[in-house]
Image (cartoon, rainbow, N blue to C red):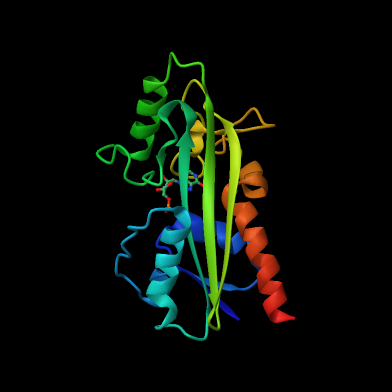
Length: 190
Ligand code: IMP
């Protein structure tokens, strides 16, 4: 059973490979180089759009699409659905610095990551959405991971996801969603 991850993001594909015991390939591995336009109004819609772009091309594979984002309470849950495009003139490090600077006097440090995941196999869609709650540090901390990892401390930890990728692998929004998806893959196989 081959699993296609509808993403070009190598960091994400690595996270999937670490957690799934099956053959896992990303879009570049199957020579799919088109950009999939994510214009849905929710994470689940966007994850579904990514999967639907592939179902006719790869009817015999399991296809998984995910869409995720980072929500900051003090910014009315921005960047949220627009996380990839937020302050897009800056690189990840500069953007994280800018967010910490923007909120330096704000006592509300609450934030969360969301991950919607859609699995397609043999005309069936399985959908799940998971979150992980935490807080913003006062500075950008750690070099591992990607995106907003250096400015997110999950509840119960005192390090950012970028300082402690082992914790991220256990409890992240994506790890939780993948676990649900794995249950479904096991169901499909048995
Ligand atoms: P995507 O549309 O699911 O690829 O995610 C949108 C954006 O959310 C990414 O470009 C990242 O900036 C951010 N993001 C999603 N997941 C994570 C994560 O696990 N860590 C840090 N940032 C993330």
